[in-house]
Image (cartoon, rainbow, N blue to C red; front, side, top):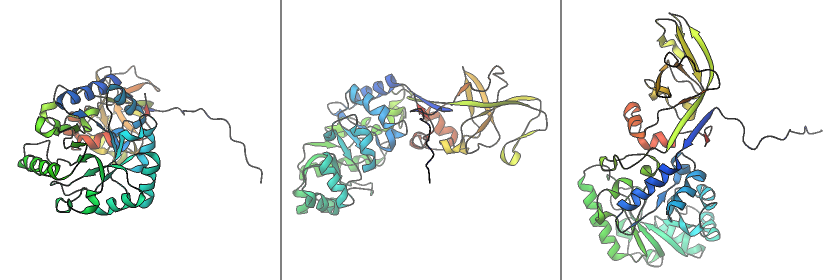
Amino acid sequence: MRKTKLPDLPAEPPRALRLRLDRDALAHNWTALDRLSDAASAGAAVKADGYGLGAAEVVPVLHKAGARNFFVAHWCEVPAVLAHVPAGQISVLHGPLTAQDAAYARETGIKPVINSLHQARLWRDAGGGLCDLMVDTGMNRLGLPMDQLGDPLIGALDIDVLLSHLASADEVSPLNETQLGRFTEVCGQITSRRRSLANSAGITLGARYSFDLTRPGLALYGGIPCPALDGQIRQVGFPQAAILQTRTIQAGDTVGYNAIFTADREMHVGVASLGYADGFLRCWGKGEMQHEGRSLPLLGKISMDMIVIDLGNAPDLKEGDWVDVPYSLPEGAILTGLSQYELLTVLGRRFARI
């Protein structure tokens, strides 16, 4: 059977969604967090595709700003980061689950974060080398239990960064001091080149929590996990959607699934290319789009790929024009009930990063 020759396609197909990244704001945020880290250096958590903004876009900016330690969660996230920074600056938080993972780390020079005796054994059997070690000091998530610190497998590790993770750094909690005390105890038992405890919110707890390396994530990308960072962090991601169609509806006409909106007058409306498949979930239903500061309220239910908006404040908008999606993370979290982390990481792949 003769195969049909496909035409040559453009390198980048046209998009009806775009996500503008303010690189200056991203660099500013890292610099601010590095300064707040006292004598410690700030690294960068770039897991989940750079918290949804695109690892290929954010990693070069962070590296140029001064970051030299990058953290991803999965091994499949390594290539996007490795394209921009040396292998020795990348750590995989989930560690090796299989011998293949350990072999991949050895071949690439990526540092695995060891979380258990099982992972320590896998790393040893693969030939070992420089690694990081995560110890659980009270979150009961990933991390070596403190009662296993004396195991010979741990004593044999060549540890660069000794880590733990704060469970409640974004609030006033006695658990913060408890975890600090436990981590300090761990540091006295485990030999390592550097130590790291604080995330974005943990940085604001003071120099005692900073140790040698901090690991900001959310705040790099415009999130404000605690009041102490308010006014110091800038918004980084600015989504926009194209208008697909405009129309005039009459009083009594309904809009969208289940007809939950009924027009009480003649209205000029637009259909924009944005929906819950793009991470704009239905909990945004009482929100709005904007254009040059003008409010464009949402009408009816959010569909998978489309929203309907009231163009009464912007009657000049036409098909192919772009509207802004208000995406201040603190404000969006209040409106939707989602966490600021969720708001970032649900952004879909159909956004062109510009």
